[in-house]
Image (cartoon, rainbow, N blue to C red; front, side):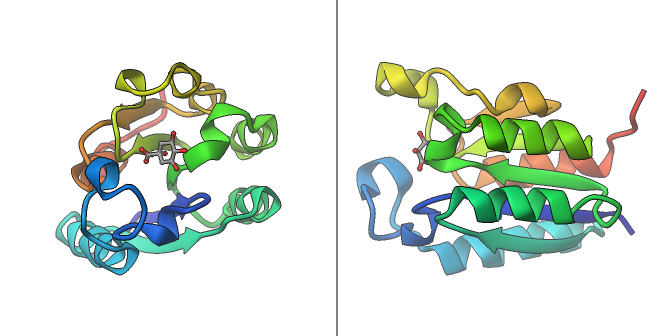
Length: 145
Ligand code: DQA
């Protein structure tokens, strides 16, 4: 059974409260329940973490080394500036998929650039919760070349 770590960055814990027109009405607990349900269907073991602190996100990525077979990461705002998160993803070299609930390319200019995506095998954005399920599905079938 593959083990996948799902990492959520700053303010993802405020889903259901923050900018509902962009992120929807469902809260973080319902996102976690959805991820667990989808992981079970794919026969994946999943752990979910969320932190508002860059260093804790880096720690979570580092601790995944040798433990997890894949990472799904929504780095949230860190996406747009965190070279530390990028370096951590590259350092552990675990297949990672970046997910964004919103379509970052259809929003403010500063959200169009992801500095973390180049440390990932792919990026999914704009599909809400479904993006996490698609990322899990991709990792379930992923084999390194
Ligand atoms: C986000 C998009 C980011 O630009 C933003 O800072 C977030 C959430 C998303 O899931 O759409 O916090 O990562």
